[in-house]
Image 1 (cartoon, rainbow, N blue to C red):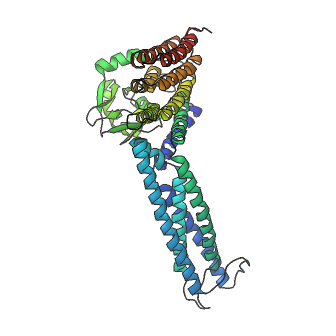
Image 2: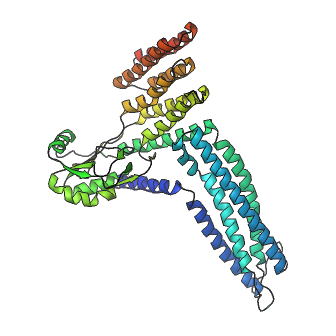
Image 3: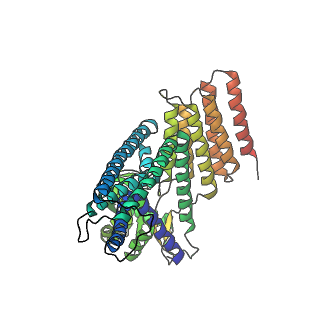
Length: 451
């Protein structure tokens, strides 16, 4: 694999590891707590030097008795830990609201939010620092040792906590708004689309050697050995570069019929290997080439991003919620992401080694599947809702104007025709049907337009 392709592959693996670390509420607070401990070690060393007469502290450093210092630090520590409980309570309320209003799959978007993690970490770090300074007050040969610089630093951290609390209240108030949630999901989906498109661009031009992918698939179906899944869970990530090395070392071809996002069942087929005698070697190393887990992620599974937007739209269109404008917002962002798919979507299915031999045959969601899962469920739930139908047609019109492949344009036109049929069957008012038909004619005109 060329250097540039290898470096990009390593960068994507690093992105996956960062994403795995980001989706929790303990890493950032733990790092900030360690930073607070390091800061305490520095300020305590300076306070020890000042106490022993080796250093003069600046005039702005607070001074006072040991009893006064203990009282100040105890008050600060108690107040900070109380606010930590408040922040946790607000976070839990936000997570509960997200689960109820946006769906359970939206919880990960709130858990991975950096603002919440930094807020929790800042308060925890301040509490730890205050406790360490409180413990450091002790009798000494020159009277009580009072770490004046550390106490001043504690007060400064308290001011930082106050600013952080104001930021957190504003941040959580903005983050639970539906348009912000939808835009955040769409932003993450756009990044995943760009990453997967770059994956297809990584394959350098090289001489293709050996059997073609179609010939290899035929042999894999008839002669290939089956490798079963070791543990149930969602396929989250495929390390394509490592899979290529595993197949190259075994002089074999690996076919993985599943893409990230599919659920794997323990004991069921995970991959097929040809020639079959290489199966033992590949099986021993295959665990290092993929990651499974209890949930789906956006790292390589762009379908998950589309499903999240569609889920919010379906909840908005349900009889219990009946929020047409939220559904329209989701349709707008779905149209934007499909425009990106239309212009950049070139996922790589066949991975070759540096000599040009096919080593891994993988799968990615097809353009047709992404378009259908973006529109069909929303259309089915938009019965009797001309406003939603019009916005679906407007989104199809925008995607159509950026699509040049005849097959893809035909698929978009088919989706527009289905929207029109739903309108004719479910919208009783003639003027409403006329508005939908007008939008459908715009899609038809874009479809019939030739470059």
